[in-house]
Length: 252
Image (cartoon, rainbow, N blue to C red):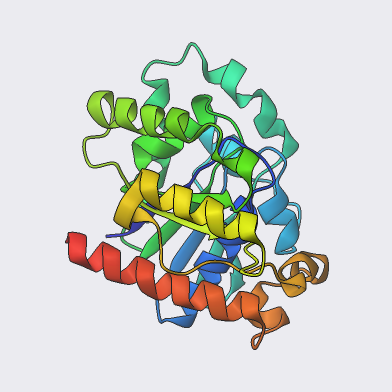
């Protein structure tokens, strides 16, 4: 049975898509079978992995027009692509009965096929994100090591708590991961200390260091392990994935 993890932050530019891909590919590197789901209408994850334009995307599945049809990016790593059409899904589904549970229903047939399903949420707290949280076991919050990135953390926690109470009893934040980190910068170190005061042991020990290879990999349509396996980015995401597996296993 797949463990489903949503990567959530309603602030853009914090490394959410980069982390979704890095975590997905890192878990594969550690022997897991992974499904990456692009739930963002901007489709950055889809574009970053070079997924060709497909007749069936997450949009058609949510609309009830088709079952999910994963695209194989590489061995043991499949992708559910997104499309700009998804931007209209929230308005189109607003009157659907049980609209918060649509994604959970369409994911059901795939749960036995994967060890992990990683969902790249949109940078908002609307119906798409709500569907992701209702479907997930855990939430990971990527957080850029900058002062402004701290704003809104309370709102994220509040939303997760409400979903847990009203829609999904098993949901919990399994970790916060600092991204774009430079240990030489006092501000970056201070932000991480602030995060630790706020989230305690939920903050991962691994920090994703600022690394040019992580920015270059999407242009080559590759994950960081294919593009630059010896880079700091690859090292950090592999270490993060080991932490994730350990935490998930301890919860079982």
